[in-house]
Amino acid sequence: MPSAPAPSGPRRPGSPRPDSWWRSAAIYQLYVRSFADGDGDGIGDLAGARARLPHLAELGIDAIWFNPWYPSPMADAGYDISDYRSIDPVFGTLADADALIAEAHAHGIRIIIDVVPNHGSDRHPWFTAALAAAPGSAARARFWFRPGRGAAGELPPNNWQSIFGGPAWTRVTEADGSPGEWYLHLFAPEQPDFNWDSPDVRREFEDVLRFWFARGVDGIRIDSAALLCKDAALPDVTGAEQPGPAHPYTDRDEVHAVYQSWRAIADDYGAGEHGAGEHGDGEHGDGEHGDGEHGAGEHGAGEHGDGEHGDGEHGDGEHRERMLIGEVWLPDPARLARYVGPGELNTVFNFPYLNCPWDAAELRRVIDETLALNAPLGAPATWVLSNHDVDRVVSRYGRPDTSFSLERRPYFHGLPVDLALGTRRARAAALLTMALPGSVYIYQGEETGLWEVQDIPDELRQDPIWDRTGGADPGRDGCRVPLPWSGTEPPFGFSPAGAAAAPWLPQPKEWRELTVAAESADGDSMLSLYREALRIRRSVPAFAATSLSWRPAPDGVLAFDRGAEHVPGSTVRCVANLSAVPVELPPHAAVLLASGPLDDGALPPDTTAWLQAH
Ligand code: NOJ
Image 1 (cartoon, rainbow, N blue to C red):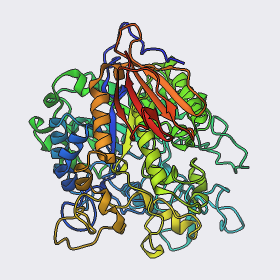
Image 2 (image 1 turned 180 degrees about the horizontal axis):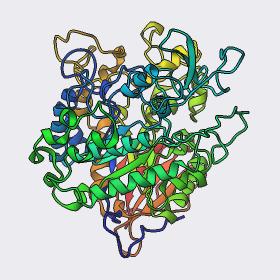
Image 3 (image 1 turned 30 degrees about the horizontal axis):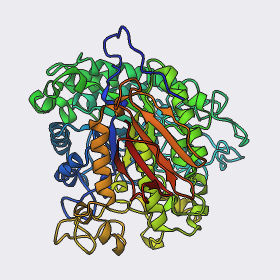
């Protein structure tokens, strides 16, 4: 079913253009801790990322999404932020970030950063101030503090459970040493939830957005985007609540006002209304927002000349256009669609596609649903196979059950994995995914076919999920193992020669075959496939079409066209064989690319081909 083209017609200043970069971008997710270590401490950093920008330029991506890079006690790998306007020393400095943004732009690569609005860190100055303040104080009103239940307040205020396991409430000790109120944390105790009913919180995050847009950042990935607003009555849950207006903390209607205000800010910057010299952070001074910890003199853009990172350096208006992408896990497509409604987020992650098994009918259903959901709103689809929270694709597709869900990770880790099969399918899935209309996300290491590391020794595991579930859930460390770049032994070029420390998670010795260097030298490698696919996707006009047309195909086979059917030779057909038998290819002028060798002209099982039509 073809999707409608992006709406055209009069455009108000700052509203998205049909050719907006984020509508079709290939976006590389850079998990900075595990990408490349520049200083030899075993942890990836911005110097490492800068040094590897040429790899990303050669790969052919359009943008990088950085996982959180801010100062953080790292209780949840940086998703517990203590200062939203700086860089954690383990990763580098604000000057490094500025240089990285400028260098990426010079490579034609845009930068998306992660903003975490649902919760901060228990070391955030607002939270330490709240702990020092009295119950009922303004400082506590920025979070969810409540007295406990029970005769002496010894029970949590309600029965909510943390998404990482255990209760969602932690009791504090008051300044006088007595057991005191409880605070809410939907994730780890080190991640107190902000209270989005507080005007301080709203202003603060609007200012954080401006701070980074003013530094030249092109987009914001919004963490846990559906969780921000809570029912202030904080009622117990029964477990039967569905996300939506009646749910006490998931997908409440009030959250949309937050994103409408954020979109207006993004559009303002995209429209160039904050040209160089206009948008120094000084104009959003702390005097305005009551956050004494972030004096403009400390972090203000004013300390860096506009020539260094002002919008002026990014050329035309198209380059300046900013985008917002929401991390929204919702089962109901209609509720999900509300986030990309008019004047709201530009895009949301497509998690149903990621969770879908390697099954033609299921994938087609998800693809159709995705396109049907986005098309009427003029929003582009996103296609996501992997990220830093889920098992790697090669392992998922190598199991007897190829579906995935966060809740059932322990079950999936108990299944056998056929890595050769998973790799073949991951190659086929990459071509299927990159042929779909919309933007595509590539999680670092997918391009070299890394697999989930399931045998990390327990004592080396870092993910709080492992501890908080008492080891019942292995957590997400297995997809976060540092990348192999070169050489035949750990650290595989992840850290410089003679590094003081080993990589923060151990790398499997078998990854010597999956280094960037090894795969660069092999025309049949996963890396060569990704480079070629991204090159074709970017240069062949058919891939610019905003729709697809399904073609008849045997059971277990997906076939669709991209491009203008009325222009001879301009159509590209993608055929993915998810069945157990080889299938004949339809008539074609040329095979542009295939994920594996053809079998006497036929398309083998678990293989995808891109065909140039006659
Ligand atoms: C979603 C992020 O992707 C995940 O890594 C993090 O642990 C939670 N949000 C909490 O911030």
